[in-house]
Image (tube, rainbow, N blue to C red; front, side):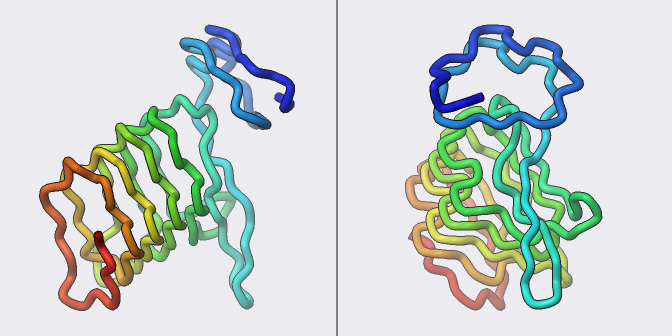
Length: 178
């Protein structure tokens, strides 16, 4: 859908369950149930670090998806990153479940996702999670377990006024939480 499109009407793609890829340029207004019944799919791109090939998650389609699950792999490649601002400002998202065990959550990846209240990150000795600056600012998170996190960027949880419990590991390398 090109930049000139300003609106996607109500039920425009209602139950179009075979849509495999959808690209939207610009920021059109989206009507009620415009993508009802369209299966959610993570958008991603390949990334190469040295000899390792991985995947960077860049968003989700349709944007009305409420639960985001980041798997271990996509197309047989490990998910290593959630891109900066990948989901920023998406008020539809209410939950995030990260299965990928060695992942970087980019700067402002979930910034201003005002209804994001549940975040589950991987845990265990073999998991390494890096959280970028302002990754979860202005979210509705109530509790967060950062036991597998090696670094927390500046203002990662700023404006999270509902946040009452934060669990940090004893070996966290950097926690610039504001």
